[in-house]
Structure formats: C-alpha cells, structure tokens
Length: 304
Image (cartoon, rainbow, N blue to C red; front, side, top):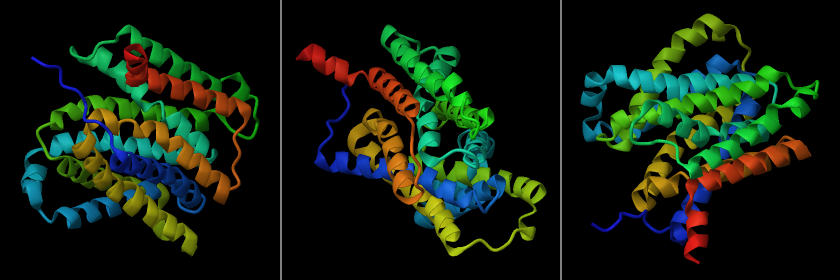
C-alpha cells in the first residue's frame, strides 16, 4: 500500500495559513489591551461566550449540532475546560504582567507538550529520536525565556512567565483528549467546547470579579474584546478548519510557527513592546524545536 502523504501547500493555502497566524497572534495583542481594564475571568467569559454565540449563528443547527451537545455534553465540558477555560485564564492572568509577544512565544511550546503528553498517555504516538530532539530544543528555549536571565528582570514576576507555559501544557493535554472527537465535524467540536466553557466561566467571573461593579471600559477595550472573540476565536476556528480541509492537519499545524511573529509585530507597532536578546534566543530555540518536530525540512534535505 502506498504511503499517505499530506496534501501539498499551494499559494492560497500558504496565504490562509499566514492570515491565521496573524489573527491568532492578534489574540495576544487584543488580550494585552483588554486585560488592563477587564479582569481575566470576565475577559475569558466574554471571549468564549461571544465566540460560541457567533459559531451557533454560523452553524444554525447544522451537522446535528444540538443533538451532539445533548449526547456528549460531558466530553464537551472536559474539552472546554482544558482547551478553553483553564488555558485562557492562565494566559490572560499572565498578560496582566507580560506583553503580547513574550506570552505568544511561551505559548508556542504547545506542540512540544502535546508530544510529551501523547507519549505518556497513548500507545500510538511514542517518542522517536527526532521528536525527542525537537522537545529538547523547545524546552531549552523555554528555559532561556523563564530562566535566570528572565528572573533577574525585576519588572516581570516569575508566575507571569510560568502561566502561559502551564496553559501550553493544558493545550497539550487537550490535543490528546481531542481524539475523542475525530468522528465529529470540526465546527461542531469548536461550538461544543466553547458553549460549555462559557457556561463554566459565567459563575466563576460573577463570584471572582463581580463584573457589575466594574467601570465601563473605553471604546478601544470594547473593540479589543470583540476582536478577541469574533476575529481571533470564532472566525479563526472557521479559517483553521478551512486550511485543514485544503491541506490537512499536519500542514495546518505549521501555524504554530507563525503566531509569535504576528503577536510581536502588533505589540511592537501598537503597544511599544520590545523583546530582549534573551527573548529572541528563546524564540529561536523554540522555533527550531518545532521545525525538528515537524520533520519536513529534514526530510526534504535528505531527499535533496
């Protein structure tokens, strides 16, 4: 039997991939703007609720959406917790202290943690020498970012650097758990997890933040919340599914390499954020680890 290979990327799919990377990079930018005025738990609820509402309008019950929600609500709730509610709270809380670019770089370690989690909890995705090398490079990059050099910067507390990494670990667990949903249309999975994660976050934000006591945020913050929910969550999911249908899941995963540059660019232009040499070195090591994990560059060099 001939080996199954991922579809080739053409100019259109590369364009969509770059657009998605910029949009997901924008989520860190929007969050950095909004979290200065809206507490993390309330911001997470707004992001998830508005995105879920938008996807329900987009699907309007297609693919037996409501039947799936009734039958598999427990699974959607678990996925919503580990793929939406928990990591978003961790990232947004960290972003009260760190910029969009640095948060996006730390969160870019998600595929590394996914490989390590899958190796521990699945029988068909074990570590290979190539995967181990990629993980080592990525973890070295993470150590550079939150290691002694970063700890020496008195303006950034250690917990703020650690939280996006914990979010990446949560995403890694979610990626492994997500195998339970292989038989469902991807938009249904997205709508399901967002629906139940927003239901989880509602009592949390009411109890912890008392949002009715918060002052009315300025217009730029309201626009950032809408951008976070509608552009960087609801529309980004639809775009991601489109790329998967055109180029396959492996090619779609390359977006991980594109997100940090988008967040760094937006942070530099609009928020006057600047990364130090240590941050850039950490990003380079993480990027190298992701390229090694992907394996296609090494395979292309071998074939050449």
